[in-house]
Length: 474
Image: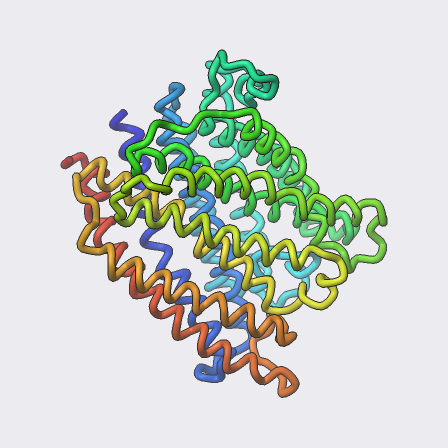
């Protein structure tokens, strides 16, 4: 489908052009923490807001764009929800960047209540920020519902969730890609509903001055944000399940009973895992804290165990020819495991009181995003480029893979080591008590420059080829 080719190429070009800019913002923040640069506090937190929201936004949409493209193998995918998502995302990003860089909006990427009303920002910037969230929310919700409708036109809900495979039935067959995509889309629907409620409450206070319940707002914020970040990772896993076996010359994966059970369990527990963000909120009902701890332990295990076993079994004695796409997918799974382990350690209540406000959290977060989710999307992009241009990026394989993986590993290690030494997160300068944080910030920035170099090489290569698809010259 040419139209789907073009909108997918448009997503790739847009995401890859924004990616190095977002990386640069992160490097500037680390250099400021290392005392190499002297940014004002307002500038630092503006950069933090832009960096976080851009990274989450571009890689969520890129992972969903990859799923939308591959979904046409099984069902009829309408192009208009993907296109509407693209247009409203652009509108949202323009409003967001205007609020941040013209209006000095600087609340951090999760804009925790009541910060948007107390930050030293232009009054119109808060309105622009809330409108930006509204534009993004509408676009993404319509896109998610469009994909769900496409799946449910061919499969019943029970078939899409592979319930027949749970009891050992072989027919009708539900491909793993359909199962994982369906559970991910269903997981996002209540998260977007929560975002709508959150946005309405923000607007009520912004326009009328009526105060909101801080605990309710925090629950809504983290339910939406935590679920969104987890589900974008699962979109990446769906593309891995669909593409990885072909790289090894093996048949497609099948949905076994344990695969169906794992992903149905993920659908249930991902909705409650966010509670670990509220352990320190003593007014939160105690039973909810127990649910959060159990869900945080359970959520990653089924998906990680099943996916890791499948990937290792695929690679074992396969004679796979390694190029960028399978390398991205394989290493993405390995770092996903490491990042997930870091998250599980943080989600234990006793550890959480020590680790959660330290750089341990950006350590595990960047591990399973920069070295996990992003690699899954880059794997899809590399495959897409080869499908459309015939170029398997062989010239880029060694320099890009080496620089990206070496740089990424050093970058996240600097977070983990500083976090284990109780260096706090979300500060622009480190006090003398944790002055080692400045050293590790410099180390992290240096390794991040390796990542940026690899990304610039890759962007130059991929954008040129996707641009030809976009303008119809290939």
